[in-house]
Image 1 (tube, rainbow, N blue to C red):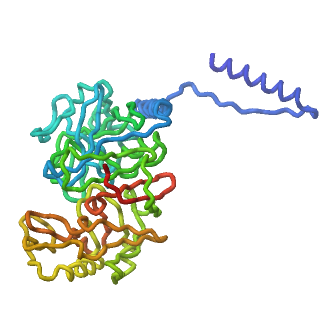
Image 2 (tube, rainbow, N blue to C red; image 1 turned 180 degrees about the vertical axis):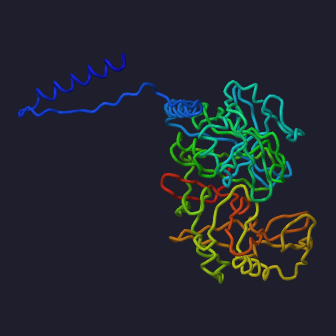
Image 3 (cartoon, rainbow, N blue to C red; image 1 turned 120 degrees about the vertical axis):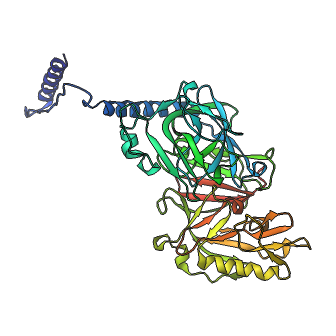
Length: 442
């Protein structure tokens, strides 16, 4: 039947071409024929079907979410003993709520999860996602291209005894934390800025049966916001217009004080907004910013330009998953020594468990307004002026510390979440820009 239809179409096209040609030129068309649509390999069929479903899902979701943005409640982890910021996400069908670390430095989104009763993750005070109870949970097979090729950067493991074995991972973080589990596709339910809700289908998720590290204290998982094909950011910005933003409340705030992580244009426009380029290809999958110097008050600090050059092992990223600000040694020393001059008379202390070099006893009194204004200078002229409480931070009762850590040399500089607090940050993926402005975040 396929061959007969192909021949009929070919004859018709030749007759039309001959009739329309004044010089009776014959048009010859070559048409190929295949006996089967799919290759013989069963896992290639799975890949093809998966890609078709992904495309159809994206088309459907774009229709449903057009004209609105998504927003997720965002709060400090202080009440949970964590120096992170948490968002609430709803995963699966029916949707279950989970508290996850908001991490612009991570590609993988995962939750504390059990797959058919297996796993040894920490249960205490954490919610557990039961994969078998979600009708939308679809594991990723270990023989698929998604596992073998696409997810290699997410530490997919090569162990694959049978085609039905799920694609597994061992995801390692820079602070030594780790999560192990299997990959799956799942549905997320998000609130929209217009008051409605939307279901985002087919998002890559990690079902973590085991995890360990201080980064996860008080959390049920991680929301990966780094820029990669399989991060939550990639999916959400595709649907909501290529932008996302957040405003981090004071890191000491209680859990009932919240702001929003928003996908789509922000509704609040500050008159003091400044914009600088984002270099999305410089230090992938991180959000690289073009800092060229740091000043204290009116004095530009003597920092070699190599510190800011990513091609020489330097460069700077903005990271919501890192708490303190890490500076290459050649930048760290001028900053902390410059600030220390304004803290003369305060006793240096070393609080237990605090990995910061410069800490001071302030029980006798401390006036932070006497500190000079720290300022990050960006290429193109934009300047970021963090609040003083963002770089002289509370470490314990009566103790304040300079919120910087030496990253060694050469090293990538990291502007952490405490330095970012009480600013609205908007990442425009399409325009490759970062806009920021001071805000109460409320």
